[in-house]
Image 1 (cartoon, helix red, strand yellow):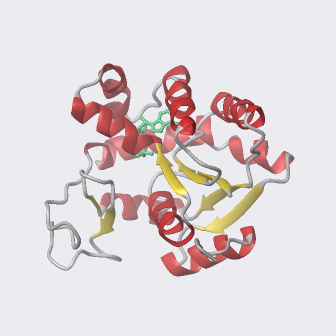
Image 2: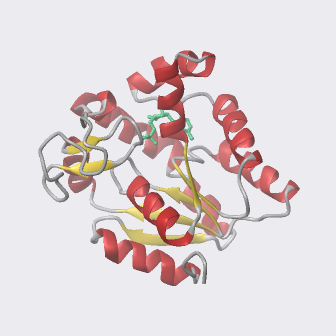
Image 3: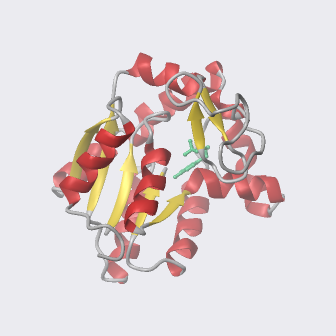
Length: 217
Ligand code: AMP
């Protein structure tokens, strides 16, 4: 099973990718998480990506395509990419990489939902900076405010989840990532889900549509 998740920031891609990883053993590949980890470690890639990320702009295609290429080296047959591809050039590069491996994409899942509701959701998002797990202060709060339920460490609000940067990220999404829906619709790979439905409903819809079997069955 090889999936990519498309949709604006705040649509729940990371949450669903993590669920699919737990339920079906698919490896989650989040370009945002990998870039943030590189930034924290102060790598060359992290340094080159930092300014773009802070401004809510896309990191240049060649950097992320190269990153995904090396991720695929460590990945078996199953993965779910959340946050990649984000441009048509990235989608084309991914198709070439997968064709070379004779492992075509199973589906591209598009998360869509009312813009104002997604912005509200992003603005109340709290993130575990150690592993990318997210909570929502209103719809999915941690048991203790500001503390991760599982590792007991501090939660943060991502720097790019501030109102001005959110607006920029949505603008970038509309201009550069939205055209990907048509790209995947043409090849019959597009699956649309309602991003504002409950976490369980979205997960069931995806699993049903792709005919996923839980890992180990
Ligand atoms: P995310 O966590 O997916 O919202 O990503 C956070 C930031 O990382 C984005 O605003 C971009 O600056 C950068 N980024 C993540 N994935 C990509 C990608 N596929 N292409 C370019 N930039 C990306």
